[in-house]
Length: 337
Image 1 (cartoon, rainbow, N blue to C red):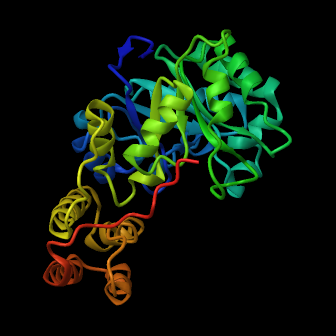
Image 2: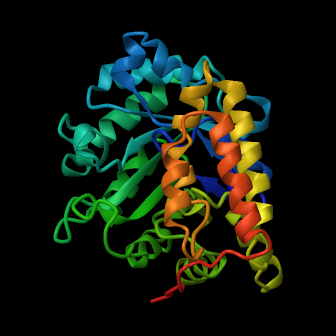
Protein backbone atom coordinates (compact mmCIF):
# COMPACT_ATOMS: atom_id res chain seq x y z
CA UNK A 1 0.00 0.00 0.00
CA UNK A 2 1.06 3.59 -0.60
CA UNK A 3 0.63 6.78 1.41
CA UNK A 4 1.74 9.51 -0.93
CA UNK A 5 5.28 8.59 -1.96
CA UNK A 6 5.65 6.20 0.97
CA UNK A 7 5.70 2.61 -0.26
CA UNK A 8 4.78 -0.09 2.26
CA UNK A 9 5.25 -3.74 1.34
CA UNK A 10 2.86 -6.58 2.03
CA UNK A 11 0.33 -5.99 4.79
CA UNK A 12 1.95 -3.24 6.89
CA UNK A 13 1.48 -3.22 10.64
CA UNK A 14 0.85 0.15 12.28
CA UNK A 15 1.39 1.03 15.93
CA UNK A 16 -1.71 3.01 16.91
CA UNK A 17 -1.28 6.47 18.45
CA UNK A 18 -2.05 6.26 22.18
CA UNK A 19 -1.74 9.03 24.75
CA UNK A 20 0.85 8.30 27.47
CA UNK A 21 1.74 5.04 25.71
CA UNK A 22 3.35 5.60 22.30
CA UNK A 23 6.26 7.60 23.60
CA UNK A 24 9.82 6.97 22.49
CA UNK A 25 10.83 3.86 24.43
CA UNK A 26 7.66 1.98 23.53
CA UNK A 27 8.01 2.92 19.87
CA UNK A 28 11.59 1.65 20.01
CA UNK A 29 10.48 -1.75 21.28
CA UNK A 30 7.63 -2.07 18.78
CA UNK A 31 9.90 -1.14 15.88
CA UNK A 32 12.47 -3.68 17.09
CA UNK A 33 9.78 -6.38 16.92
CA UNK A 34 8.53 -5.51 13.45
CA UNK A 35 6.07 -2.61 13.55
CA UNK A 36 6.21 -0.99 10.12
CA UNK A 37 4.74 2.45 10.83
CA UNK A 38 4.95 4.49 14.02
CA UNK A 39 2.67 7.22 15.37
CA UNK A 40 3.50 9.66 18.12
CA UNK A 41 1.13 10.21 20.99
CA UNK A 42 -1.67 12.39 19.66
CA UNK A 43 -1.09 16.08 20.20
CA UNK A 44 -3.48 18.94 20.89
CA UNK A 45 -3.73 21.55 18.16
CA UNK A 46 -4.50 24.25 20.70
CA UNK A 47 -1.41 23.35 22.73
CA UNK A 48 0.77 23.43 19.61
CA UNK A 49 -0.59 26.82 18.62
CA UNK A 50 0.17 28.09 22.14
CA UNK A 51 3.69 26.61 21.87
CA UNK A 52 3.28 24.39 24.95
CA UNK A 53 6.65 22.75 25.55
CA UNK A 54 5.26 19.46 26.92
CA UNK A 55 3.22 18.98 23.77
CA UNK A 56 6.11 19.87 21.48
CA UNK A 57 8.25 17.21 23.20
CA UNK A 58 5.78 14.56 22.05
CA UNK A 59 6.76 15.36 18.46
CA UNK A 60 10.49 14.75 18.79
CA UNK A 61 11.29 12.09 16.21
CA UNK A 62 14.23 9.71 15.88
CA UNK A 63 15.75 7.86 12.95
CA UNK A 64 14.40 4.52 14.20
CA UNK A 65 10.84 5.87 14.10
CA UNK A 66 10.57 6.09 10.34
CA UNK A 67 8.21 5.87 8.70
CA UNK A 68 6.33 7.87 11.32
CA UNK A 69 3.26 10.09 11.59
CA UNK A 70 2.30 12.86 13.97
CA UNK A 71 -1.38 12.80 14.89
CA UNK A 72 -3.16 16.03 15.80
CA UNK A 73 -6.60 16.63 17.25
CA UNK A 74 -8.81 19.64 17.83
CA UNK A 75 -12.14 21.24 16.97
CA UNK A 76 -11.06 24.59 15.55
CA UNK A 77 -10.17 24.41 11.86
CA UNK A 78 -7.79 27.36 11.95
CA UNK A 79 -5.91 25.92 14.92
CA UNK A 80 -5.78 22.48 13.33
CA UNK A 81 -4.32 23.92 10.14
CA UNK A 82 -1.64 25.80 12.08
CA UNK A 83 -0.90 22.72 14.21
CA UNK A 84 -0.46 20.59 11.08
CA UNK A 85 1.99 23.16 9.74
CA UNK A 86 3.94 23.13 13.01
CA UNK A 87 4.00 19.33 12.94
CA UNK A 88 5.18 19.36 9.33
CA UNK A 89 8.28 21.32 10.38
CA UNK A 90 9.42 18.26 12.37
CA UNK A 91 9.42 16.33 9.07
CA UNK A 92 7.23 13.31 9.79
CA UNK A 93 6.39 11.09 6.84
CA UNK A 94 2.74 12.13 7.07
CA UNK A 95 0.25 13.98 9.25
CA UNK A 96 -2.71 12.10 10.75
CA UNK A 97 -5.97 13.70 11.88
CA UNK A 98 -7.67 12.29 14.96
CA UNK A 99 -11.36 11.89 14.17
CA UNK A 100 -11.78 8.92 16.48
CA UNK A 101 -10.70 9.51 20.09
CA UNK A 102 -13.73 8.73 22.29
CA UNK A 103 -12.49 10.19 25.57
CA UNK A 104 -14.72 12.76 27.27
CA UNK A 105 -11.99 15.38 27.62
CA UNK A 106 -11.57 15.30 23.82
CA UNK A 107 -15.15 14.97 22.55
CA UNK A 108 -16.69 17.52 24.93
CA UNK A 109 -14.92 20.22 22.94
CA UNK A 110 -16.10 18.79 19.62
CA UNK A 111 -12.84 17.07 18.68
CA UNK A 112 -11.95 13.42 18.06
CA UNK A 113 -14.95 11.15 17.56
CA UNK A 114 -17.30 14.12 18.02
CA UNK A 115 -16.46 15.02 14.42
CA UNK A 116 -18.57 12.03 13.36
CA UNK A 117 -21.61 14.09 14.35
CA UNK A 118 -20.66 16.85 11.90
CA UNK A 119 -19.37 15.30 8.67
CA UNK A 120 -19.39 18.58 6.70
CA UNK A 121 -17.06 20.12 9.30
CA UNK A 122 -14.91 16.98 9.31
CA UNK A 123 -14.58 17.26 5.55
CA UNK A 124 -13.88 21.00 5.69
CA UNK A 125 -11.18 20.51 8.30
CA UNK A 126 -9.52 17.71 6.37
CA UNK A 127 -9.60 19.75 3.16
CA UNK A 128 -8.01 22.76 4.86
CA UNK A 129 -5.20 20.67 6.35
CA UNK A 130 -4.49 18.84 3.09
CA UNK A 131 -4.22 22.20 1.33
CA UNK A 132 -1.99 23.71 4.03
CA UNK A 133 0.80 21.10 4.10
CA UNK A 134 3.02 19.51 1.48
CA UNK A 135 3.26 16.02 3.01
CA UNK A 136 0.50 13.37 2.89
CA UNK A 137 -2.44 13.63 5.29
CA UNK A 138 -4.30 10.61 6.65
CA UNK A 139 -7.08 10.21 9.22
CA UNK A 140 -8.25 7.82 11.92
CA UNK A 141 -11.88 7.48 12.92
CA UNK A 142 -14.53 5.15 14.35
CA UNK A 143 -17.68 3.53 12.98
CA UNK A 144 -19.85 6.29 14.38
CA UNK A 145 -21.24 7.91 17.49
CA UNK A 146 -23.76 5.24 18.57
CA UNK A 147 -25.01 1.88 17.32
CA UNK A 148 -27.81 3.69 15.45
CA UNK A 149 -25.52 6.39 14.07
CA UNK A 150 -22.61 4.89 12.13
CA UNK A 151 -21.73 7.19 9.21
CA UNK A 152 -18.21 5.88 8.60
CA UNK A 153 -18.97 5.02 4.96
CA UNK A 154 -20.01 8.56 4.16
CA UNK A 155 -17.10 9.90 6.21
CA UNK A 156 -14.65 7.77 4.20
CA UNK A 157 -16.00 9.02 0.89
CA UNK A 158 -15.96 12.64 2.02
CA UNK A 159 -12.39 12.38 3.34
CA UNK A 160 -11.16 10.69 0.19
CA UNK A 161 -12.78 13.43 -1.91
CA UNK A 162 -10.70 16.15 -0.24
CA UNK A 163 -7.36 14.39 -0.47
CA UNK A 164 -6.99 12.20 2.62
CA UNK A 165 -4.56 9.50 1.46
CA UNK A 166 -5.37 6.66 3.88
CA UNK A 167 -8.00 6.01 6.53
CA UNK A 168 -7.68 3.93 9.70
CA UNK A 169 -10.98 2.76 11.16
CA UNK A 170 -11.48 1.50 14.72
CA UNK A 171 -14.32 -1.01 14.80
CA UNK A 172 -16.28 0.57 17.64
CA UNK A 173 -18.60 3.55 18.09
CA UNK A 174 -17.80 6.41 20.41
CA UNK A 175 -20.55 5.18 22.75
CA UNK A 176 -18.70 1.88 23.22
CA UNK A 177 -15.42 3.52 24.20
CA UNK A 178 -13.27 0.36 24.45
CA UNK A 179 -15.97 -2.01 25.72
CA UNK A 180 -17.54 -4.92 23.90
CA UNK A 181 -16.07 -6.49 20.79
CA UNK A 182 -14.85 -4.49 17.83
CA UNK A 183 -17.10 -4.94 14.78
CA UNK A 184 -15.03 -5.34 11.62
CA UNK A 185 -18.03 -5.90 9.33
CA UNK A 186 -18.45 -2.24 8.50
CA UNK A 187 -14.69 -1.79 8.15
CA UNK A 188 -14.83 -4.48 5.46
CA UNK A 189 -17.74 -2.76 3.75
CA UNK A 190 -15.79 0.48 3.57
CA UNK A 191 -12.74 -1.32 2.20
CA UNK A 192 -14.82 -3.11 -0.45
CA UNK A 193 -16.86 -0.07 -1.48
CA UNK A 194 -15.91 0.40 -5.17
CA UNK A 195 -15.89 4.17 -4.63
CA UNK A 196 -13.08 3.90 -2.09
CA UNK A 197 -9.65 3.95 -3.69
CA UNK A 198 -7.47 4.98 -0.73
CA UNK A 199 -5.93 2.39 1.63
CA UNK A 200 -8.10 1.30 4.54
CA UNK A 201 -6.37 0.27 7.78
CA UNK A 202 -8.31 -1.89 10.24
CA UNK A 203 -8.04 -1.37 14.00
CA UNK A 204 -9.64 -2.87 17.08
CA UNK A 205 -9.15 -6.02 19.18
CA UNK A 206 -6.02 -7.25 17.39
CA UNK A 207 -4.49 -9.02 20.37
CA UNK A 208 -3.08 -12.13 18.70
CA UNK A 209 -1.64 -13.34 15.42
CA UNK A 210 -4.76 -15.45 14.86
CA UNK A 211 -7.05 -12.49 15.20
CA UNK A 212 -4.92 -10.40 12.88
CA UNK A 213 -5.17 -13.13 10.24
CA UNK A 214 -8.91 -13.56 10.79
CA UNK A 215 -9.70 -9.84 10.46
CA UNK A 216 -7.47 -9.51 7.41
CA UNK A 217 -9.18 -12.39 5.61
CA UNK A 218 -12.62 -11.18 6.70
CA UNK A 219 -12.19 -7.67 5.32
CA UNK A 220 -9.26 -7.50 2.91
CA UNK A 221 -8.01 -4.29 4.51
CA UNK A 222 -4.72 -2.88 3.27
CA UNK A 223 -3.06 -2.66 6.68
CA UNK A 224 -3.58 -3.57 10.32
CA UNK A 225 -3.25 -1.19 13.27
CA UNK A 226 -2.42 -2.56 16.72
CA UNK A 227 -2.98 -0.49 19.85
CA UNK A 228 -3.72 -1.90 23.30
CA UNK A 229 -2.74 -5.40 22.13
CA UNK A 230 0.89 -4.27 21.97
CA UNK A 231 1.06 -2.87 25.51
CA UNK A 232 3.17 -5.31 27.50
CA UNK A 233 3.54 -7.38 24.34
CA UNK A 234 5.54 -5.40 21.77
CA UNK A 235 6.63 -8.67 20.14
CA UNK A 236 3.04 -9.08 18.86
CA UNK A 237 4.15 -7.50 15.57
CA UNK A 238 6.68 -10.27 15.05
CA UNK A 239 4.09 -12.89 16.03
CA UNK A 240 1.63 -11.52 13.48
CA UNK A 241 4.15 -11.32 10.66
CA UNK A 242 5.37 -14.86 11.32
CA UNK A 243 1.83 -16.23 11.28
CA UNK A 244 0.82 -14.32 8.13
CA UNK A 245 3.96 -15.55 6.35
CA UNK A 246 4.06 -19.16 7.54
CA UNK A 247 0.66 -20.04 8.98
CA UNK A 248 2.42 -21.14 12.16
CA UNK A 249 2.24 -19.65 15.63
CA UNK A 250 5.38 -18.70 17.50
CA UNK A 251 5.58 -20.05 21.07
CA UNK A 252 4.83 -17.56 23.83
CA UNK A 253 7.99 -16.06 25.32
CA UNK A 254 9.34 -17.26 28.64
CA UNK A 255 9.41 -14.99 31.65
CA UNK A 256 13.19 -14.66 31.26
CA UNK A 257 12.75 -13.49 27.67
CA UNK A 258 10.05 -11.03 28.69
CA UNK A 259 12.24 -9.61 31.45
CA UNK A 260 15.00 -8.97 28.92
CA UNK A 261 12.53 -6.96 26.82
CA UNK A 262 11.24 -5.10 29.85
CA UNK A 263 14.73 -4.18 31.00
CA UNK A 264 15.53 -2.77 27.57
CA UNK A 265 12.34 -0.70 27.52
CA UNK A 266 13.10 0.67 30.98
CA UNK A 267 16.68 1.49 29.96
CA UNK A 268 15.51 3.38 26.89
CA UNK A 269 12.87 5.20 28.89
CA UNK A 270 15.39 6.36 31.48
CA UNK A 271 17.70 7.58 28.72
CA UNK A 272 14.92 9.77 27.32
CA UNK A 273 13.33 11.10 30.52
CA UNK A 274 14.50 14.06 32.58
CA UNK A 275 14.66 12.10 35.83
CA UNK A 276 14.57 8.53 37.04
CA UNK A 277 11.32 8.70 38.97
CA UNK A 278 9.27 10.05 36.06
CA UNK A 279 10.86 7.46 33.79
CA UNK A 280 9.73 4.66 36.10
CA UNK A 281 6.27 6.06 36.84
CA UNK A 282 5.35 6.38 33.16
CA UNK A 283 6.17 2.67 32.74
CA UNK A 284 3.40 1.57 35.10
CA UNK A 285 0.83 1.05 32.37
CA UNK A 286 3.29 -1.30 30.69
CA UNK A 287 4.24 -3.07 33.94
CA UNK A 288 0.57 -3.91 34.42
CA UNK A 289 0.45 -5.83 31.14
CA UNK A 290 3.82 -7.56 30.91
CA UNK A 291 3.22 -10.78 32.86
CA UNK A 292 -0.23 -12.26 32.15
CA UNK A 293 -1.27 -15.66 33.39
CA UNK A 294 1.32 -16.13 36.14
CA UNK A 295 -0.01 -18.05 39.12
CA UNK A 296 0.10 -16.30 42.51
CA UNK A 297 1.55 -13.15 40.94
CA UNK A 298 -0.66 -10.47 42.52
CA UNK A 299 1.71 -9.41 45.29
CA UNK A 300 4.68 -8.99 42.97
CA UNK A 301 2.54 -7.12 40.47
CA UNK A 302 1.41 -4.63 43.13
CA UNK A 303 5.02 -4.08 44.19
CA UNK A 304 6.02 -3.49 40.58
CA UNK A 305 3.23 -0.96 40.11
CA UNK A 306 4.26 0.88 43.28
CA UNK A 307 8.00 1.00 42.56
CA UNK A 308 9.48 4.47 42.04
CA UNK A 309 13.15 3.76 41.33
CA UNK A 310 15.05 1.64 38.87
CA UNK A 311 16.70 -0.19 41.77
CA UNK A 312 13.32 -1.21 43.19
CA UNK A 313 12.11 -2.37 39.79
CA UNK A 314 15.24 -4.43 39.19
CA UNK A 315 14.92 -6.15 42.56
CA UNK A 316 11.32 -7.08 41.77
CA UNK A 317 11.96 -8.40 38.29
CA UNK A 318 14.96 -10.35 39.57
CA UNK A 319 12.52 -12.03 41.94
CA UNK A 320 10.09 -12.65 39.08
CA UNK A 321 12.84 -14.44 37.12
CA UNK A 322 13.80 -16.46 40.19
CA UNK A 323 10.23 -17.66 40.72
CA UNK A 324 8.94 -18.01 37.16
CA UNK A 325 12.05 -17.92 34.87
CA UNK A 326 11.39 -20.62 32.27
CA UNK A 327 7.59 -20.48 32.45
CA UNK A 328 5.89 -19.34 29.27
CA UNK A 329 3.26 -16.63 29.38
CA UNK A 330 -0.37 -17.63 29.01
CA UNK A 331 -2.72 -15.33 27.17
CA UNK A 332 -6.50 -15.46 27.40
CA UNK A 333 -8.30 -17.73 24.96
CA UNK A 334 -8.69 -16.02 21.60
CA UNK A 335 -12.24 -15.71 20.26
CA UNK A 336 -12.61 -15.22 16.52
CA UNK A 337 -16.34 -14.64 16.65
